Length: 177
Ligand SMILES: [Zn+2]
Image (cartoon, rainbow, N blue to C red; front, side, top):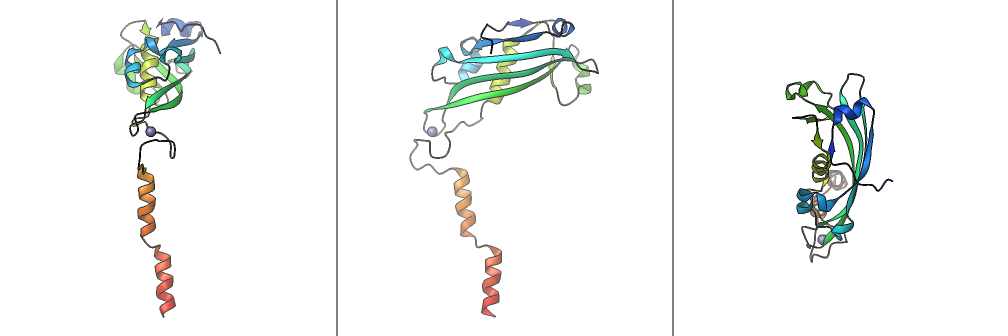
């Protein structure tokens, strides 16, 4: 995987005309909104790897497709320790210049409405990463150091075990007859 820096500003309509491949890495330290959301274990080594292919689809839409991968850490909402996370976000962007046409774009694509020819690729990458973060990050079962931790799932299972299986009840009734 390439380790050169990702270009910051792109011109999607030019990139599709040459069917360009855009790849590189962007450090989390350059993504301030993401940095607020994340608490990296070692922020200076946290980077996102971006690989995008620009091309027009048969209908003429200006597309960028590929992936954004990143490793980092988020704060567990129960024990406040770091939970390592590994994100692999598929990208399928359709660039448009006029927002009025956005409803025509096939649903498989995420519409990126441009106000001008160029756009910050860092912003687009950052948006995708923030959306991919777990809404309430928590350690997995058995790995959380918060005391007395019972996950909502466990509670549900216990509750449903308390209720008797209707078939059991039925067979008990039958035995009594
Ligand atoms: Zn935890």
